[in-house]
Length: 133
Image (cartoon, rainbow, N blue to C red; front, side, top):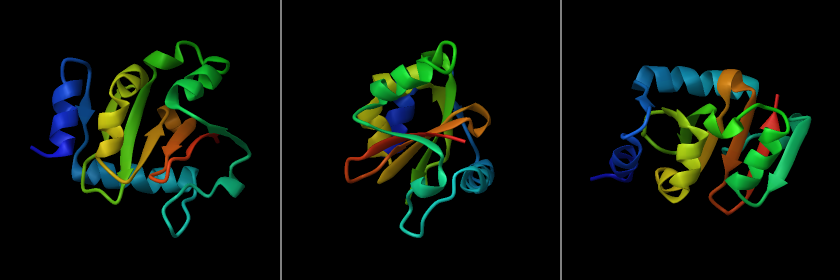
């Protein structure tokens, strides 16, 4: 069983949507339009006006709570850099509950808010950033 399959098994008791490869590719292109990505695969943070360096996804939720109602219940899309795994749509709460399994799927992980309103980037070298369009 792959790490992606293990993650899906953990998430499946809840509302989870697994996108097709084509939808995942379309999502990635839309994501890069909303949040430009560097040649080394990170969001180009110098182009993002509102951003926060944070220690955890829970800290991101505290910031999100000041801007959105019930941010923990927001549906986010998961994208992984350097992975063949398809995008997954799941609640932010489920991501928090299974963060180690979420980040194990790919080297870098992006949690994308509804309509690309925010992104949480979890970089493989340990940095976590939250940004708003």
